[in-house]
Amino acid sequence: MFRLTVMTAAMSLFLLTGCAAPNTGGQKSTILPPLRDLTAYLLVDPTTDAVLSIEQAAETLADADVVFLGEIHRHPGNHLAQMALFRALHAQNSDTALSLEQFERPVQPVLDQYLAGDIGEATLRGKGGAWDNYPVSYRPLVEYAKANGLAVIAAEAPNMVVRCVGREGPGFLATLPADKQHWSALTLRLDDGPYKDRFIEFAGGNAGHGESTGADDTVSEAVLRSFAAQVTRDETMAESIVQHIAANPDHRVVHLNGSFHSAGFLGTAERVMWDRPDLKVAVVHPIEVDDPAKPNIPDDKRSEGTLLLLVQPEPKSYASDEEEREAIMEQMKFRKSVDCEL
Image (tube, rainbow, N blue to C red; front, top):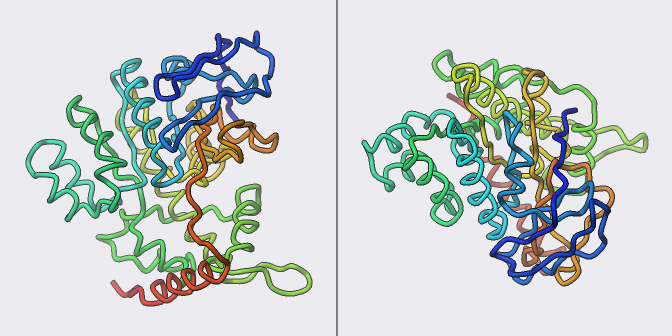
């Protein structure tokens, strides 16, 4: 697994934090500056605990052909860091493309029309199926790409396809009509391994994804179908990135996805490396710290990325287990209503 060599640099903080950090001479430090609010973030080298400025982080990522910016969806600090890093990476390499989980493959023509100035943002958001948080989370990135003439890749498989794989299994992909087969990667690598283990561990604790059954801890069919749905996303995003680089060999791709898709260089990241082992891949992985006043890096998280992005925890989604259970049941009802007939 490729890991970029991390630069040794004097620790510094960027403007958002307004704090100073001590120089550790490359040794691990257990003292990191506080995260003052939800917009604050720390970019940290997990091998030294050095806090890097945006410019230092970009230099650390300079040799990467593909940079995965993992995200905690809707976290303001996470999105601010993404914008700052993307701008710095583009300043370093003008041939930089933006790849997004947040737009699905079939809407690439709509996205291209918007970048060319042929349609307005209301049409992009409507016909392009933009996420509801597009204005505050992704608009700055897309507008920066548009202003600088950069390619933007609609990398994700359609949500309908993903949900139908989750309901019917990977065989659903073979039923896609010929004119829709480009919507998704059609080959799924579902073999046992660290990523599958990680997903099953996650799904086993989440009623929305199924649960383990039986005394021998065999995995339920529901969980296996959910894993196939997850991999549909990973394979499609990886294929989108690889196809873009094949068509534009000089481009570096900066890809945004939910952090699970690239944590530990697994998921989408590992599929890029499987398909193009010649490419250098880097991952910036976000972590919500336990104590914003005294942030630290859990030892089991140090290998999750080339760099780690520390942010404050978001407010709890649910105040009780009962509230969470009711919400999950509503989500499951919605999933069951999906029409998989094309």
